[in-house]
Length: 320
Image (tube, rainbow, N blue to C red):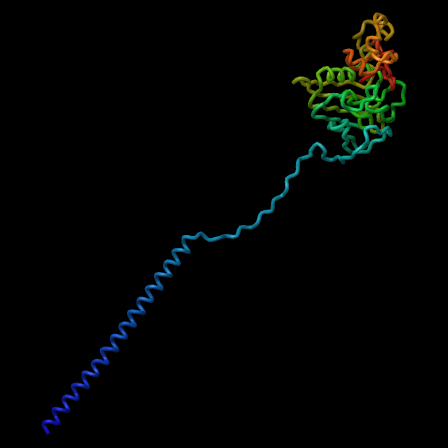
């Protein structure tokens, strides 16, 4: 009986030990699992923190609205209100369109003429006046680019010339946008001729502007002109009426005697030797021959060479 009790105690002890072992192993697994969970959470937290820090260090990309570039165009205030058209430099029709701008410069020159709503030539401008180059341009023996000028209404008068605003010698063409009916003495010997001579003698001009006015909206015959241009740094402003300057001077008492005619003024030069200029001996002096001999253009009707030269338009000047 005592032996059975001892055996029972031993079995009970073994059972207790077994239960304790199972309990201890279970606790260890729970602790290990808890530690693993904590470590996993720490790793995840660290990775999340590193990821957050990385995201914070990279600046966010912001899509900016696209800005359309508007192409810049040159300002053409000079031509505002005018239609730009092309007219042949030798057009003789005499007709002008209204409110247009036309380039009246021969070759590559930019001389701009403008008409008003009545088709009257009211303004001519040029940044630079470039003289005619008869050695490199197709210049006729008369010194002109074209054989005749536009027949603007009014030029049929015996008192009026087909007057260039910018002469051939200054690089101007012969269509109606460069021609006005101009009093013949004014054109040949007056302020118009003076202006052309001054620009030729200076070798050109800059900042040229001609303002042309009329007595009414029906006529194509100007009443007055105003020329502004710069010669060798000096601005010139010349305003004059479309009248005979000799008659104006006489009415103002600025002349003491009647103007001398071309015959008397050239009488002292009748003995000049034309053969020294007429190099080919044909009796006709060309502009090129005259220039080669040292004469400046134009040759006026009172010059001794004039009778030996061809004045196709009979305006009293050759090579203007």
